[in-house]
Length: 319
Ligand code: UDP
Ligand code: MG
Image (cartoon, rainbow, N blue to C red; front, side, top):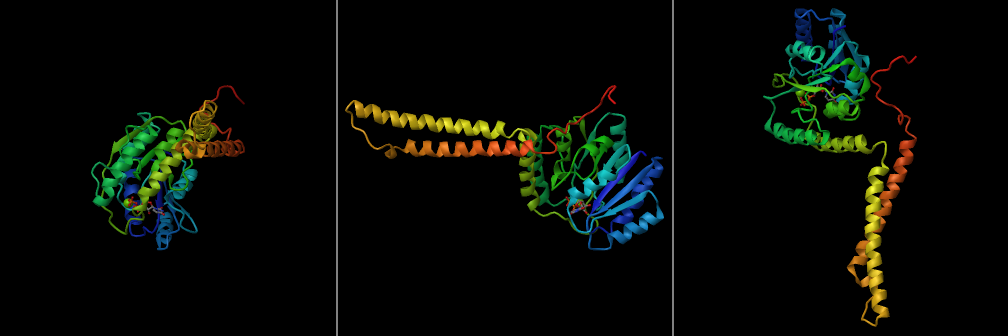
């Protein structure tokens, strides 16, 4: 099969027939063999009924329904697990992404050798309250992830080589960072294609402004787990030790100064009169706390069932 189109959706009943017909048209015009996997994320409208009808009319249309609403990431992950096409395309259900982009995306994966191609909504039809924070968000994501050529991490329209979606796990709200997840899994050929974007035709957006708060927190989580997830001591141990040593030196200086003055008959005061004493105390306490956090982290990491789960690309002559 050439292409799997994965569509996560939550209450998008009005858009589905139009979207499905449009995908079918593009696929037949380009003679692709394909499947469309609608992942119904616990919709409370009649989306699932609509999908049933679409599927009855065309066997290439498949569906999975969650019993309740979990979010876009779990929906994508479920679709990815079931996808079989050489190229997997993800697309929002709200008709903001255009199926006409599919042939070009397919070509970029199959002929130009990309592992992942992200859409870039250069001209967006969204309110300003969304487009301005989005610019900031993408600039941060570029810096933190080191994927310098992407302008639109969270674009719903993306194309993947099949093995990419089988090797990444999209959980929580991590759909915003799939390119980063792919990079962490060792897929480096990440490209971008400028795509057409339209205003939402039916229904309303499912994400509010809290998307940016959550987005930043998730980015920090990914950065941290990507870098230190398997070796927490390299982070906590380093900073813990540095703080502890600094505090120790400060205490020693304060103590020795007092002793020195005592034995030489100079005037001296209680060590607790020196502000450095309190600074030193704080540093030593925080330092040992950090060190302990690192130690506990190591124990947790050691017990992770995935501690020896590597991304193996190819093997030769191994049975
Ligand atoms: N979506 C979903 N589960 C959710 C929220 C959204 O499957 O809990 C789907 C939604 O139906 C749409 C896509 O994710 O197909 C993108 O959502 P939306 O268009 O609301 O996001 P926006 O375009 O405003 O970023
Ligand atoms: Mg949308």
